[in-house]
Image 1 (cartoon, helix red, strand yellow):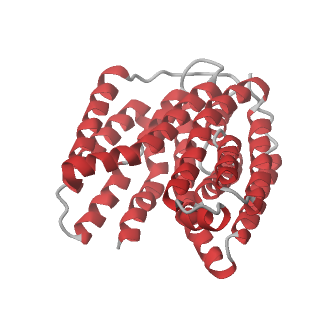
Image 2 (tube, helix red, strand yellow):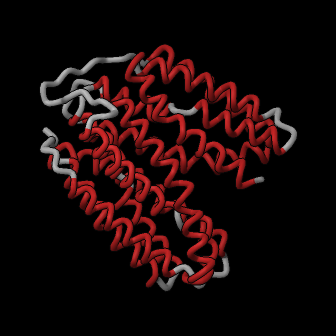
Length: 344
């Protein structure tokens, strides 16, 4: 039931993300941001009152249904009238990675001092602040460029673009989090340390810290030299680093290799979102950004599950080899994208 409650949020969010993206295209990103903010406020408050596993499962599903804030914000950023979409998306992704790094220890601290119910209600209070900020500080802006073109879900370029980059994003997310359920085992076997919990914490934090740095840098480079080149470079580098995971011998080598993986893969998703802005009209990008969000959630679920099955059958080393091969395949998919849109 614990696994089901954990996965429920991702699965419902993955199913509805394209719909919320289309909603942003039709009614504006700000409307979607307000919907997501107040939806999260309500669902998080209800979660604090859950008393049975079934109630918790329903509340976690509601959290996923109410989601879509990050994709709505990414769509709002994509509508800005500037040629620094990569830098903006990179800074936005860095803030998301920072939240994922701070959130778990902050939640643990809240639950320790205020209990689980209190922690959830404090989280709801923080979301209420976000609702107010979204209501009074955000606004939609339109962007019309002769270089961009409107999409249809039945358009060949739409379908090809969606398939290529949804697959790439799912691979990137799966590669980033695949080892996390087994990180303690990985540290114990390869790190040769008695303090497994501390070592696992360092390893998990390393990739998040590196991703915070990488997202902004990759976004900036994408604006300068082209997004596809930066995406392909990150994927190729990431595949090599993944394979090198099988050859570490100390805890600090594990931390270093996880940090390098975050540097290689952390900036790929913001570059893809900036590339969407360059290639298509603002009234079409919401649906594609929604699809990228779905792909992220799918990768977050499929990666750990697949890695766990592989590790149980053949050990940890094949996890790194197979994941590295898939990341290389992602780079080949990017090379198959023949669109001539580049950063300017």
